[in-house]
Image (cartoon, rainbow, N blue to C red; front, side, top):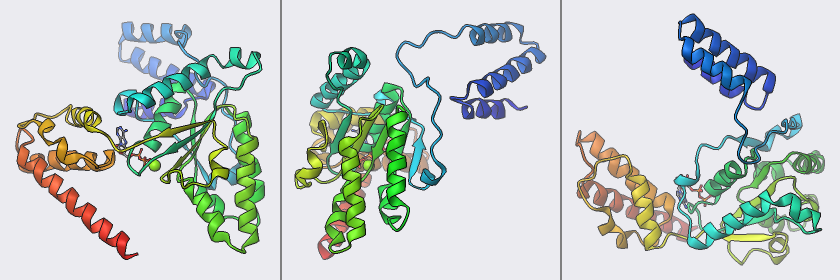
Length: 328
Ligand SMILES: Nc1ncnc2c1ncn2[C@@H]1O[C@H](COP(=O)(O)OP(=O)(O)O)[C@@H](O)[C@H]1O
Ligand SMILES: [Mg+2]
């Protein structure tokens, strides 16, 4: 079998020991067939004596997610790592604290204390809430499941109560990071429900579950709203983390990250001031558009005018967007 196919099979078997072994054996025997004796021998040795993981990983077999819940929950494979995110100093400290608490979980619980495991991420769109949930899951070595709240809520007729119960049963047993993106949808749904009693009941039972659950891993909810969020929702979380728009220092760091792999014909730090008030996602779009402009023009380097044009486009986009918002 072609090497690429084998690699794909190997990755797909992640978490299933038997299958993983079988594919690994297949790779080794392909190498033997190709006469790559040294590589084959070393692969076999590694397979027989895998090095011990340095930190707790999700070694427990994954609990299969109930079929019915597949519609409103999705497992995400992390592709980003710590180097890909720019965090404020405060947040670096908060996450270091959460990580070390998680790693000393057993000792903490033995003393009758609880490990913080229900987190609320707040801040404007495009400032890293989802990205951070992904990287956090990778850091603690737990699988990440995204709950599609809109689907869960809109499926309220009939099955929802059962689905919510399944969801939390799962979160209680399966060590994982359960991520409720766009959590404000919940508060909104409750407000919109008005006299719609069933919807109201569904939202309330979700909130009660969040209150009661002691997750085997973490429960993270993300919202674009700030303190205007209902206090009844607010107090259910043991830690609140703010993701604000980047300050000058963070913009500088982010530009360094985004232009890491290209040749620059200008100094992006001269543009920091003009990016004030932009979200990371907006700055990213400016950088990507500038790089693409240079590629299209067959330039070796990204130049100031590429960046300035991309910045002007982003401004236009923002302006049009706010115009639309004001109209609605
Ligand atoms: N703090 C950050 N550091 C690095 N990149 C970021 C950051 N925040 C946002 N981004 C970029 O913007 C994209 C969208 O961010 P996301 O995490 O989805 O924002 P949010 O969930 O807060 O709306 C990310 O995929 C990433 O490319
Ligand atoms: Mg998000």
